[in-house]
Length: 235
Image 1 (cartoon, rainbow, N blue to C red):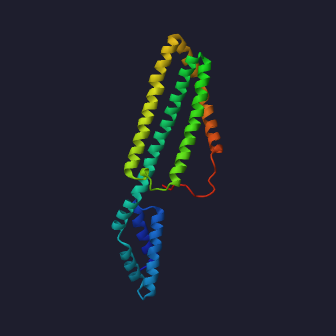
Image 2: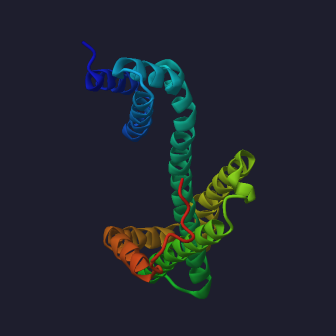
């Protein structure tokens, strides 16, 4: 004897077993299926006939999962894209702040600073640079969200350009922070002076595990609160 709930449960299990539809997708499809069954039942069909016709109209499992695979692939790709973009942006902020900090050390050497003074200048400048970088990124994200999704960076080519620019900027700032500016500072200080400065800077960097949470806390407190969904970009 035909049992509608057993048939619906079996249909739901087949959809879930395909591994493509989310629970929300399956629930939405089931709602449509039940509405069709109820409508067809009211037209005079038996429960079994109504279920078979409704399931047929809705589509077989293979075709439905194929369609949902196409629909769900883009959000998954976009989440992966923004995860990678976030890592690249983090590297950009850190390498750019390191380059600015190293530039401040070079300027400090020219100004006559030595030892721990240079280390403190470097740490202070890098901390402020990280905060400024995060603030700039926040303002840019708000501006982009306010402009909507029709901008250049909303298309595939724009995303490629964005990733390319961030990657190149990260590499260039990293080269200046780790190679060019340290070499210039070493030439200005000499081996002994550069060694003392490097030792002082190494000790000063022990403060980073304390400074980073403090910096992030200050940024979170300082950022404007979103009281509405206006300007938010849903990926």
